[in-house]
Amino acid sequence: ELKVEQNPLFLSMQEGKNYTIYCNYSTTSDRLYWYRQDPGKSLESLFVLLSNGAVKQEGRLMASLDTKARLSTLHITAAVHDLSATYFCAVDKPGANSKLTFGKGITLSVRP
Amino acid sequence: DSGVTQTPKHLITATGQRVTLRCSPRSGDLSVYWYQQSLDQGLQFLIHYYNGEERAKGNILERFSAQQFPDLHSELNLSSLELGDSALYFCASSTPSGRALYGSYNEQFFGPGTRLTVL
Image 1: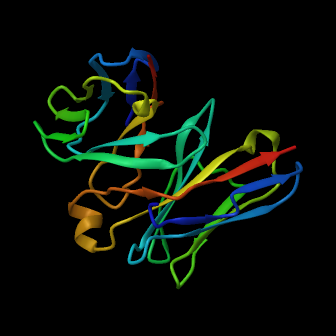
Image 2: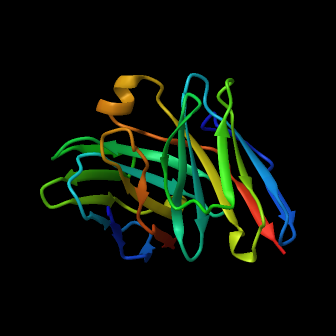
């Protein structure tokens, strides 16, 4: 069974500082997705990482994928309040059964 | 706005009742997925339909069923509701082609969700 773990589950960040959050998964996959969810809202797709060494950047967020280590990182540069949200990573395996298996999410809170 | 629509936004009902949640995928998407999000279980995959056919089942209870219609909208039916069924229910849709389904990636776009409260 595919398992996805995220840590930490909650992170209090100080404005202006850099942070990294992690996503581990349990089985071979080269497809990893990052989503953002604001409280009570839907999930917004942030990044799709499709191969070992893939790196994607959008604004203050940069995501990378190491398929050999089964690890993805999301790096936050100079945190700002607008980044406060819950971030989920998800993994799927190619094929007809293309459900996404999600981690429990990491809630980020940016304080002044 | 992802282009995926869900109705209703909120649903309050009593134990034992039956409800229907509706989802319309993005224009052109043939796949619809249903997920349940609760505090204790997190985001759980329920079921996947592709162009009217069931493709995969996850942790979906026997009391729950779904279908996808010829116009590609989907309905999730929840019956004999229990307090523990209270959750946010999301549907998502994804890219339409066969190549995308089997050989490429599967970026899913989520609807706004239906918040179900069972009293």
